[in-house]
Length: 122
Image (cartoon, rainbow, N blue to C red):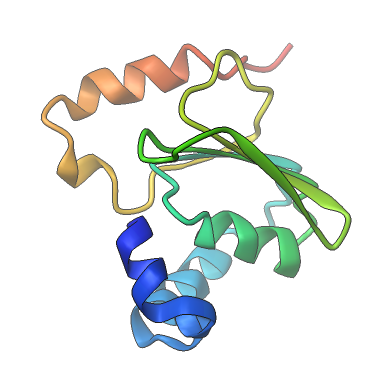
């Protein structure tokens, strides 16, 4: 989500039909899958990572967005969320690109960049 939208909607963001419906769709798609660590590319406010941290067994989230003014960390129910302008390799078992690829000129290049940052199975 764009950081400007979170400024406008504030704490009521989870009640907005758009984010509520996308969060519901995400949870539906993840039925039977239990990711532990997520990498959320173009995360903006981190809405979807925060949703997974509070409504699933996800234990840690790495949110990446070039719009962040600085790196930051927070705990949500004792689970860490890391906000970074960029990341190196991340041990994640779920990578999110929510509302991102349609805004990037080289979507395949962006996917390749993050595929290289997430180690594959043993």
